[in-house]
Image (tube, rainbow, N blue to C red):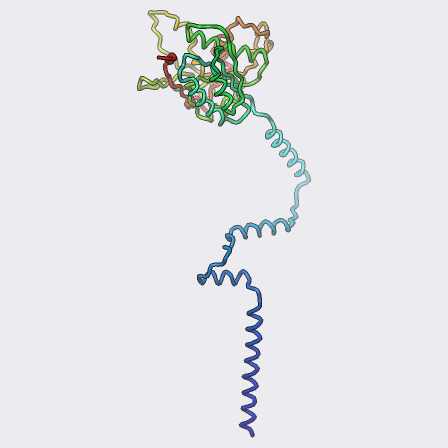
Length: 337
């Protein structure tokens, strides 16, 4: 009897364990698989249909949500809000203050067979300059529309000025074109920093942010590179910090005085100025601001730059020994040669 009772108890225990394991296995099988189980299977070589997001993404989202739902109380001095408001106002004013307009003047000649190509090259540089920037291109009136077509495709804000006068001397024509541009600024009272950019100029882009800092006159050294000679000539100011104390000048023959000796020692691309000197007579001491096409505005500007010792600043202000502008001298070959 005792043996039969023990057998019955063992049988009951076996049935109980069997049913318990069956129930646990059943519910485990029908339960949905979580992310943790997905990672377990993937670690064993099983690839899920959709790859999980990177851990960094989920952590970042978690941190953002937890920070958004967490409020932190900090004790601040009573004048803190006022200081923050003043700082925010100063930042807003500095951020919203408009940048100074840069006015680029480029005279061109129909005799230059590379004119359209060099215009496109310069336009590609100017497109990289943060606005506002105005490009004034001057040429002699002609039946050709090549310059206009190039300018329309540049994406740069420009004004295209033409004139009807004829010139046999190329240098005289270039000076006349500069005066046409300056008279246009004077007539329309364009306010900005004026720079004469030759078609062969090559720029460091930081140059344009530097000339925006000019108040009255600014000057800098530039490298003149000759296409036919293996040498580089430096022209421009000699500075002590931002103070101009001298000039790199061309050598002149004192025994034979020529027309070259009467020219300004400044390269036309080695300085910039505030355009208000052209149309603000009270500030600059000019007799009249009324446009006079007979006046030689470019000579006036060059004279003011050389004589304006107190208003003339070297660029960059840390010391104007850094070269930010190169001019490649390419002789102009007439069309058809």
